[in-house]
Image (cartoon, rainbow, N blue to C red; front, side, top):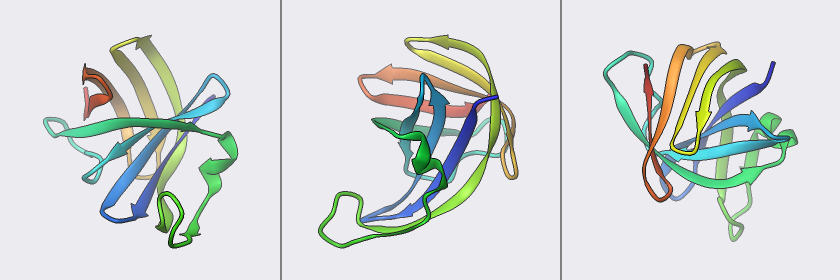
Length: 118
């Protein structure tokens, strides 16, 4: 079963890096606010570059002067089941410590997606 990880990233601005294992990499989105635990709450999720699978375990400090400088900690992780994957919609069931249940990522403009419980 594929993994997911959400890293709380204290960079220039606090955000959450939401990552899903797909195709041998971690597909990644930057989420400016805490990912939603309840239905009815939608969060902006900006698609960013893929990361290597080994990055799923990363916690620590990215040094000043490097891209993404700041503290990174694992906020949640676990496995997920993929229900649907289209170019503009991904539906999956998260089995994490904090987030559990059916979630959707829906693309609405270029790299901008909405993340919500569905």
